[in-house]
Amino acid sequence: REALRQAQEVGVAPDLLEAAEQVLRRADERYEQMRHQLHVAKLHADVQAVCELLRKCKAANMRSPAISEATAWLAEAFPDLEKLQLELVSGLESRNAVLLKRVISEDNAQYLDPELLEKAAKVIEEEERLASVRSLLITAMSELDVEKLEDAIRTGKDAGIESALLHRALETLERVKRDNATIALQAAMERKNAKALEQAIKGAMQEGVQKGLISDAKQLLKQLKARNKAHKLRWWLSQKEIRFLDGCAELTSGACAVVEQAVQILLRNPEVELSIEGHRACPQECKPNSCRDDDPNDERPLLSQNRALSVARALRESGCSNRMEIKAWGCRHRAVGKRRLVRIVTARGDEVHDEAQGSDDHVDLEISSSVE
Image (cartoon, rainbow, N blue to C red; front, side, top):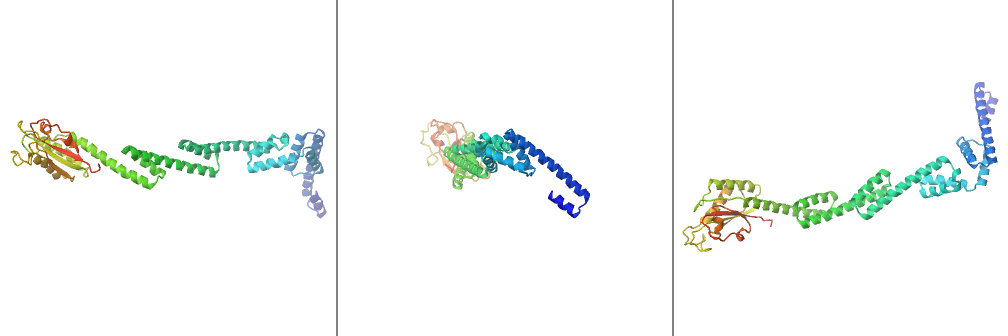
C-alpha cells in the first residue's frame, strides 16, 4: 500500500499502478475474509478453527489487528498451547520420542499443527523401531551368539542404527568368532584328527587367532599327515607278498612285480624308513631258534640276509632313497616262510610272527616312520 502511494507520486506507468491496485484489492479481500472467520470462530469458541486460521495467516505472512487479537485470545484461553507447540517442534528437531509422546498425549494437543503432529507420530514409530533394534543388538552382544549377532547387525544396518553401536556389535562379533575359532583349534589339536585340524586352522586364520597357536597347529598337522601317510603305506605294503623259490635268494618275476609296485609308492615317500627282514625255513629236525645266519656251522649260511639284500638292492636300483635297515632272522619265525613269500610287516612285526614250524623261505619288508 505504501509502495503504491509512492509510485503514484513519482508518476509510475499507469498499467503497473493498475496491476498493483488489483493485488492490493485482493489482499484486502483476503484480510477481510480472514478477520470475519476469526471473529466467528471466537464467538463460537471454536479453538480448532482459530488455530487453523492462525496457521494459514502465518503461512501467508499476514499481519493485522484481528490476527493479533485472535492470537492473544488463544493464549489467554489456553496458556499451555504455545508451550506445547514449542515442545513439539523441539521434540521433532531432537527426535525425542519420549517428549513427543508426552506432548501428543496432552488434552490440548488436538489444537496443535496437524502436519507437525503427523511428523511426530512417524518419528515416534521410527524411534520405537530403532529402540527395538538396539535392544536386539545389546542382547546378542551379551549372549555372545555368533548367529544372533550377525542377524542383529544386518537388522541394525537396514534400520539405520547409529554407527557407534554397530561398531561395538561388529567388534564383539569379531571377538566371539576369534574365541570360538581358538577353542575349535585347541580341541582339534587335542583330538589329533588331521582333517578336523586342517579345517580348524583355516577358520583360525580367517578369524585372526594368535599366530603362535596357529603355527603350533600347523606343525602338528604336518606330523599327523606324515603319520597318516606312513600308516597308509604300511597297510599297502602289508598286503603284498614277495615270493622266493625254495633255497634261493634271487627275485622271481612275480617278486619283481611286487617290488616295482612298492617302488612307485616309496618314490613319493622318501622320508619313510624301511626295515627289510629276511627269513628262511629249515628242515623239520631243526630245533626252533637254534638256526641263524650268523651261525658258522649252519649249512645254509646267510640265506635270509641275502634275500633281504636282494629286495633292498632292487629298491635302490629303482631310485628309492629311503633309509633301509637289513635284518636276518634265519628260521626263527618259521611260519612266515611257510608260504614261500616276503611279507611286509609293521615296525613291531617281529612280535606277531607265528612260531610254528615251516618249510619254505621269504623276506619281510618292515616299514617304520621317523614321525613316531
